[in-house]
Image 1 (cartoon, rainbow, N blue to C red):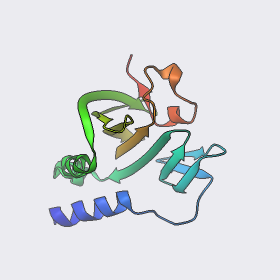
Image 2 (tube, one colour):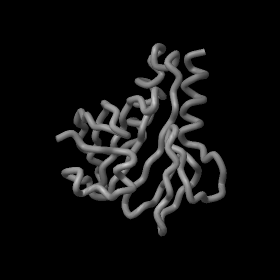
Image 3 (cartoon, helix red, strand yellow):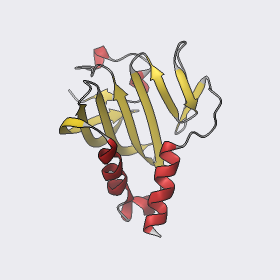
Image 4 (cartoon, one colour):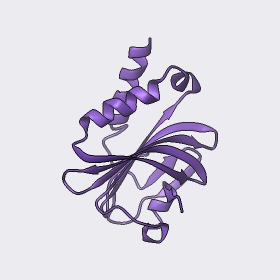
Length: 150
């Protein structure tokens, strides 16, 4: 059962929910308009938005209780080619998230975080071509997904 949940979760995280591009994202209960020039692959994934990408996967509490979140983090991390990993706390939609920041070998940054938005647990996978140092460096679009700790 545990492995089945892991396989399903990974498949959902890496599978596009529809091949057509969309102009809005559904982030838990929030509808987010995709900025002009950005490419949303589904309502749950924006892959190219001025050097920023975001994907999220909803988890049930049972999955977290079984450690599926830790298994997903490990599986995703194995796919990363990174030179440095550090703990990171941040907020998304004013809710606390904990996870890791990865400095990738190609110079980009990835962030994996676990938290809740509107009582819904989720794993957030963010990518930055240039990692912002403070909230003022984030675009309004990016602020829908992350606020850096002060």
